[in-house]
Amino acid sequence: MAKKNKNDKMDRLVSLCKRRGYIFQSSEIYGGLNSCWDYGPLGAELKRNIKTFWWEAMTARRDDVEGLDAAILMHPKVWQTSGHIDEFTDPLVDCKTCKARFRAEDLQDNKDPERCPACGNKTLTEARQFNLMFKTFMGPVADDSAAVYLRPETAQGIYVNFLNVKNSSRQKIPFGIAQIGKAFRNEITPGNFIFRTREFEQMEMQFFIPPTEDEKWFEYWKEQRWNWYTELGINMEKLRWHEHGPDDLAHYAKAAYDIEYEFPFGWKELEGVHNRTDFDLSRHQEATGKDMRYIDERFEEKFVPYIIETSAGCDRTLLTVLVDAYEEDETRGDKSTVLKLSPKVAPIKAAVFPLVKKDGMPEIALKIYHDLKKKFKVFYDAGGSVGRRYARMDEAGTPFCITVDGQTKEDDTVTIRDRDSMEQTRHKIAEIEDFLSAKMG
Ligand code: ATP
Image (cartoon, rainbow, N blue to C red; front, top):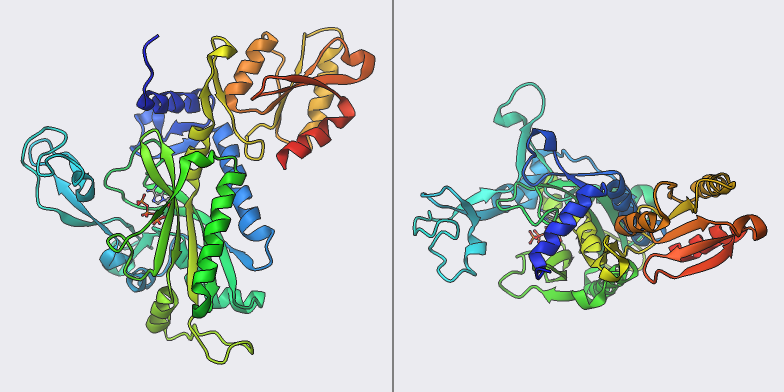
């Protein structure tokens, strides 16, 4: 058998995603739209489960973080104040010969940064700044006075609502605001499947604190976020911290660490944890004249809160979950691919099979399926051999397969097959629900 290399692994994962209904190319029947992807039936479930897992950990189960769902379109002055209109740029280089386009940063790692990596000619232009925000127009007149932007990050929606949330929820500092939502960046070089796209979803939380407590809370959130990925079942050996040094630390940040994952295409950022100081609220206070300072009886002086930000990409997390779960295990027979997704986020929690389509087995299996469906996303399958049905579910990432067989009628038991160990154990029908609940954690 030909040696499979790491890039082939990505290709095979992309084709599994299409075959099983995880991810499709956007507008595929029109030839596709570069860097845009659609989540199919299993992908939509997986994404929803990841968002729920984040939301539960970051706000629903906490007393000190409130949720928010702000609009994508915001007043254009927000982006002036935040610095995005003037500074949210990437240096762009064109090749005059083959017209290929590169981020100047990406060329720095090449042996000869002045040579075009696509055609080999030394015909690269000087770098020019390219703003990554998508611009559009509000209302019928397409002139600059009607210009608005698709938000390039969800964070600004949180900052401009700081006073609204604080006053309506009666939260006291320290407290946070969490939000999940779409963001848009006109990336120069999108790629690596859903790793870098022009439309993506972020899961961000901004935690407002007294300036004197910034180091404590920074360490606290670093630990929380690291633990979140391990609870999601990600292999810890593939995760690491990257500290921003003086060259890549944003001018407003006091400290910044990224959580990185080792993808088949290298170590890449998954999430940033940043100490943003009082930069954001001070800028908005200056631009609007609204007093963002905080006071309560515990503090002698008013202060503009510092912010610790945790900023994760939902699509990148989903890619991480898929890459981390993907395994080729030839002991499983010709269909040897298995997605070892954590039961917490797997799109289908269990499949229910009758061993054969006779002897009353389909009726019992359908009853089990309908009962479980009230609580879990389950799937009924009576087609083909049991081996083939297991293989289909392995590829879809379904952690458990429940089979009704000849013994079921005698003692009300079924077999439950574990996707990862492939072991089958017998359980009473009445105990299946508890069994699955325990596995969901
Ligand atoms: P990168 O260096 O990869 O461009 P960034 O440092 O600009 O990322 P942030 O602005 O800190 O990213 O955004 C927070 C998170 O949003 C990132 O860690 C990533 O998970 C996600 N993200 C950012 N840009 C994209 C993109 N183009 N496609 C998918 N996810 C993205």
